[in-house]
Length: 216
Image 1 (cartoon, helix red, strand yellow):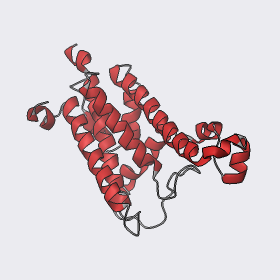
Image 2 (image 1 turned 60 degrees about the horizontal axis):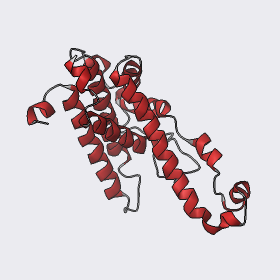
Image 3 (image 1 turned 90 degrees about the vertical axis):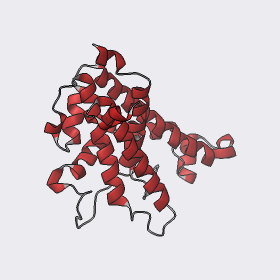
Image 4 (image 1 turned 180 degrees about the horizontal axis):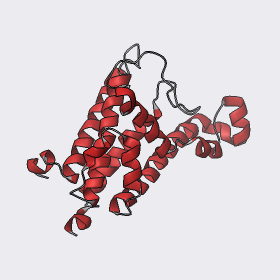
């Protein structure tokens, strides 16, 4: 990929820049984990992840139609997500596989943690008994609690698009952060999902997912 492709308003340029923002967000998040207040970087990290998703979705629309005026969506991630999903193009297919990829990564994450906690106890107790005794979820529970990508996009969009953007400006009051019994209170689920999604879209782009469509 040339520097011109990165800097131009093209699908590849948007998606490449989306990955740069997602990578920066993850680096900031990791750097803050050792601090006394792990939520200290909540707003800047949220802004970076939201902007990464915005760029990735706009890049996917441009992959479908290079003449599309993607800026008409502003920062509305829900509007972008809906249009990509309804495009009936390669972009909509990539979005669908992206959602499945994110859910699969969450399954592996939760099941890996559950397996480590079960250890040899699984030889002594059933999965249901382990949940009662040690709060270790069964595989069925993990499946039920997996976050839905569309709902997470809606949560991010509300804080990136509405009322000037919660992540861009200081807002008072407690934020309703999506959580799960399977994650720590400081793990903001949509942030990690955004990272997984943008990384996957970037990888698919590098692998030529949109090459044929661009040729057409």
